[in-house]
Length: 230
Image (cartoon, rainbow, N blue to C red):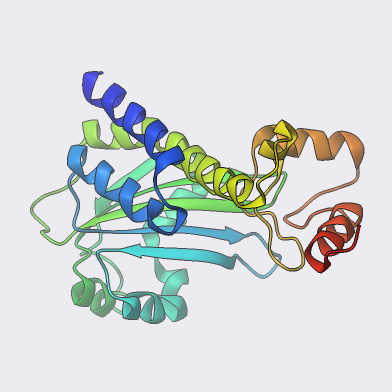
């Protein structure tokens, strides 16, 4: 419990102190202090009829080429498939027994042992996962390590969200406390990170709203704000 408590305390502090561009790497390095691993992937995707559409993927201690090689064979990733089938639970095991057409990828990037936890937000139709890997096939992740990661996983996601929102608020330089409920958005308004209070508020005001894009009134407001119009 002391290890977990220290980790959560550090995570809470880091969410307000670490620069957003460094936060994912910082959080994963902090996690590695208590749960050793060789590389990791923190990813998010929107659920679509033809399969997940990548929102972002962050590699830690791994070359960019890994993601390039992964995309064409992502449907062969048994670890992620198992996580999708049991969202919220941590799945771990050897990846060296992967099917033949996935094995070269595993060998190239040292992914002999894997651990994955996935969160599904049905309201936003978005999944977020954090996968950890060990290159040594003789060092499997233990049940205790799986329980630890499963416990801290939602705190990692929340800390990342708070870190991004805090950065947006600081950049805006406004004093209105309601800005803490502003989601991180891009040009058309995809809502990849938002606090639960924001989601609830939008659903009250727009009962038919679903998915990862902001309702039209909010998107219009965002566009006016960026153009400098009142």
